[in-house]
Image (cartoon, rainbow, N blue to C red; front, side):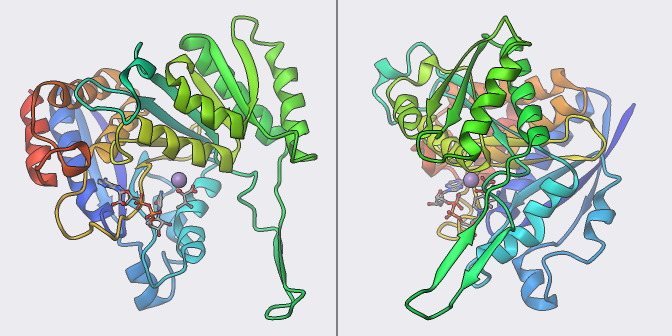
Length: 353
Ligand code: NAD
Ligand code: IPM
Ligand code: MN
């Protein structure tokens, strides 16, 4: 038997509603594949922050360093400033564990209507956003000056390193090589004159090693429009931390709901655990109603099985999910249905073994 220890961090809001379904699906599939999963749950959250003054304990990262993977729900809640909650939990995990790849697949699925006209999504939309996840625009360098004065200002530096950009481009070129061989790089070298020309130069430099991949670059503004106008043409899109963040929600909307979109925060070298989490946040507007779509979390759990070395188990999860979407009317409100989280989860569990 293959044994894995998983750190579960439901976090805030609907994180608590979507992780139990992901765990139920994992357990059902794991049993059939001789995989033994054990879970340690951590209550790190905005509630903990309000009660104890910190999102996680001082040695929190050490508590999960030895786990095989991390499954996270969502972080952030009204009453705690987002930069406090996210920089107190989510972002330290991504950075400390060198999860520099944020992989966000997008597919327009049978039975899930895209808001776009069908001729735009046919042939099938199936691409992956490879988001740089450890540097770039998400930086602590900068500050606030002259608070309250007419001369008040805020300065936020971006950090792009040769090592950081090169490794994400290499990951994206490799992935494109394993898929349809087409890579698009998001840039903004017409307006952002230091970091983005550097990104573009490194792209050109790395491309030399991947003759089998057809690559190009697009300015992020024009690219956003093209992703809407012609989503079927994309295979792998690589972007900086901020560009990848924005593109992944845009693309999730094209696929019908942000509630479906999964992500994997990967440490490709496997020196540290990787983290799997839905793209969506804590959704305060629907929390407590039992209507959250669990698919983003379930699909993320499937990516976890892939990463742990069980792609056949991961594929089984996706077959069950895609099967339900294609043939059953049971689905959550964001997908046009009337089912709650539990009923939708039962429908998916019913397809597994
Ligand atoms: P959000 O993703 O929480 O919600 C955006 C909209 O999508 C809301 O209308 C919500 O109801 C809907 N939605 C999201 N997930 C859904 C699901 N599974 N099923 C059905 N509908 C769903 O984004 P937001 O409102 O910008 O952020 C809320 C909080 O979450 C903030 O504190 C934000 O910082 C945080 N956040 C955390 C993460 C993360 O932990 N990775 C990601 C995004 C936002
Ligand atoms: C995401 C989220 C986070 C990010 C926020 C909440 C810090 O939007 O995972 O996409 O920007 O990385
Ligand atoms: Mn985001």
